[in-house]
Image (tube, rainbow, N blue to C red):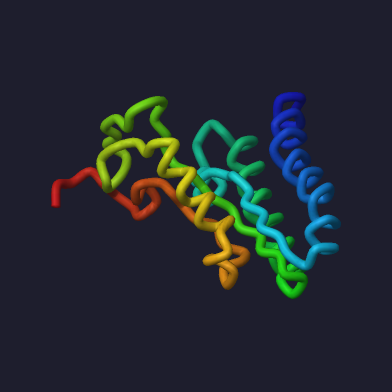
Length: 142
């Protein structure tokens, strides 16, 4: 139970407290972009990691709720769900349709896009940046 509580305290409470701290300033300005970082594990689960998957799913739901509560205040709230991320150069990953792990720069582009003024009509979105990993079976050559 201690590990479960620790992980949820960090992941869920950390995001909640950050949003709670920054939202009043954004509301005062009538403008803001929040982009939370989560994981595809929050969308589909990850065997052996119920605590992590639950925490990431909670961030997705918190993001959507905050998006609804703040949309008319000029604030968008979205999240990015990375899949497998390579340290350094992208490396082969048979668990994705694209066939490799993603690079940190590819994750960052999703975040930058959602933070940009050009995405002002996008809110409550969970953007998976995961090489098609969640599309389904990927063990065949097509």
